[in-house]
Length: 500
Image 1 (cartoon, one colour):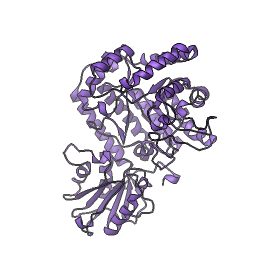
Image 2: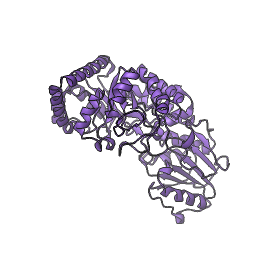
Image 3: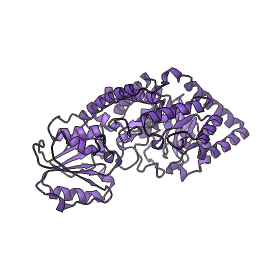
Image 4: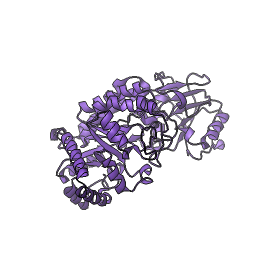
């Protein structure tokens, strides 16, 4: 469960003391600065009689809770494009050090879903790639890095969300793949990596080929959790649901019904993103169910024993007792260096009409989408696009566009200028097709950088088209440096088939 804000209220201290939540999920509303976050984690430990799992989604790429103050790693798909699992190992180590330094012990990562769909299903560039072997190699390396530095990991989202056609945050996906493809690919990845992680997160999608109830989410299915994950796969670690307040679950069951069904299906823990005060009524009903159902009470006792067994390994010595600003600054520098290396080795050259590099130009026009990672302010006070361009050219024009309704202001630019257009999954937004064609028609010299899935502009041949796989500063800088000829594109596509 979550908490309300950036510091604990007296009400929250009270219920944490009385209830001693198994874990606390930290979300953007709880994160303001390094020292504030460190202090909050210390308060959470003091408020609970049994030290909680203090969890965060720190995947890198577009799921980066610490981006308000910490450098961002490129996405998992960018990692996969490097072809070098050692980068994942080093990223896991630095991520674990960062979490520990700030007081957290559980990373809800990595995503090991196989990327098998280019629709907006909530996965996209969060996946390492589309091939089981690649995902296993990178997932194992990342897990090894987290473990070496003492942070707990979570494999998600079992039995695999990469084939979904919709995002479970909004509605329940139905994954219609057959039993053999699912078991031999998606589930196989979890089986191979399950020995390396103390947590597996169950996802909110329905798999008709794997269950008898053709409308039930996997996270609430005894056939998926108890029979497949715990039984067939023999997984002995902790099983936790994804957020039970997602749209995929709310249309299927009430929060209380979902909690009971999830726990009876074999999950050891359930997750709610709402503040604890909103979840307390569910806790009361859950306690009543335990009191009235001896078999359920025994199952909950077994889960608690599993939780406590893992918590015994959370040595107090691994959590710093004081905040060290200088050490954190040094760690940020290490993250910056590794992020740049990953980004530079991940850029992939896509089919284009063949122009080589951008040389001396006057005021190139740079179009970029109004999406959160790109619009985030930079330390210089400008934009991250502008910061990336400054070392390459002295003058440029920045023009942001709305992904849902882009408009080209032709009267503001000369067609003789060079244009660079950044896109982020343009295929999700039909309105962008006409906008992109308009930009290409108006600017004869037009270059393209994709920050999302690389097939977003299939059929649109630019003078040069690059896949950067991540809307983060290091990936943007690396792609621009390729266009200016400072570095060569060294990445390889980590995906196949319809995704292109």
